Amino acid sequence: MKLLVVEDEEMLSKTLAKGLRMMGYAVDCAYDGEEALYLYGLNQYDLMILDLNLPKLDGMEVLRRIRSEDSSFRVLILSARNSLEDKVSGLDNGSNDYLTKPFEFKELEARIRSLLRRSFSTKDTVLRCGCLEMDTAARQVLCSGRAVELTRKEYSLLEYLFVHAGEMISAEELIEHGWDSEADLFSNSFRYHVHSLRKKLDAAGAQDYIVTQRGHGYRLRCPKEEQ
Ligand code: CA
Image 1 (cartoon, protein in one colour):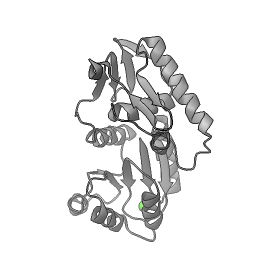
Image 2: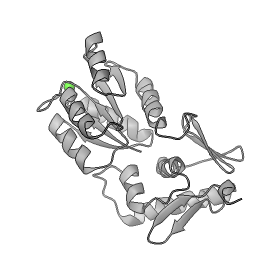
Image 3: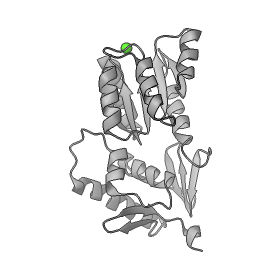
Image 4: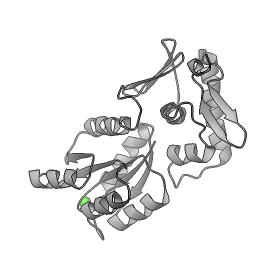
């Protein structure tokens, strides 16, 4: 999952990006409203965290412009404006959630998870596929009840495949949602992570769950779909 953090305070932006990357998200940062819209137009994000007091273009205007094109894109406003009017106005203009500064990182993280879950077919925090279970709240993967130790990258790849279980996902799309846009990415690095994820799943007993179709991409195959 890839997030765009729009925040002009550099320290806060860095802290947010660091914390979110620790959670396994890919993160891009924009430091003003215009850059936010530019990056939003350029990349595919799963969610935007949006400050309101921004240089060049106010956050509320950024939100309005996004909403005029896309009614389903997820936006979480993170702002020091904590009056009731601001919250109401933010939600009226189409933000999906509103968190006021200062905030606890844990709360931000929980709200992000909840917003991202709304894109899943289920509201359940646990996703299932054959013998595999992915607990998106605990960020843990189990195979037949036993924990499978994954790196953050492997987890984030598997999470994206889980959310789109059964669909063929291109390598470009996986990279787009799993890596920061400015990451110095060699395709070998991507293949390495997929290879290593697949090896761990195989070893845990979820054999051949990730299907590769040369030239097309990857698909998470849940055994029941073939019964
Ligand atoms: Ca600000």
